[in-house]
Structure formats: structure tokens, C-alpha cells
Image (cartoon, rainbow, N blue to C red):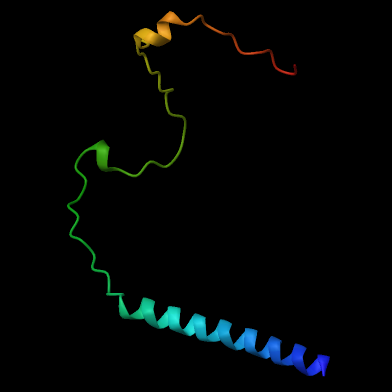
Length: 82
């Protein structure tokens, strides 16, 4: 009796999983539409070209701290390995 109950539970779990998968697939298929390719003008300057790798210069950000941050004391980072 226990084996029948376990088999029935396994079959029902598998069945509900398949039914849920089909319902989700049908819902997604109803809302899809084919993609269209936009018209892209050709690149005329180096801004639009593809970057093929290499080394870029570092980005340096310079900013003044807000007033309340300037009022607090600076705290140094702990040394590596401590």
C-alpha cells in the first residue's frame, strides 16, 4: 500500500511539473513577436568602431568630499594580511 502511494505521488508530481512547463511555454509563446533589425548608419569616426582589446588608460575620478564627510577623521585601511 505504501509503495502504491509513493508511486502515485511521484507520477502526480511529474505530471504537475509537465503541465506547468507547458502552460508557461504557451503563455510565453503568446506574447512573443519577431525582432526587426534597426537601420544603423555606418560608423564614420573612431567613436563607433569596435574595440579589439589592448590596454586602456586608467580612469581617475577627482571629487571634493561632502561637508559631513570632511568633518570626520580619515581612517586608513588595515595592512594586507592582518
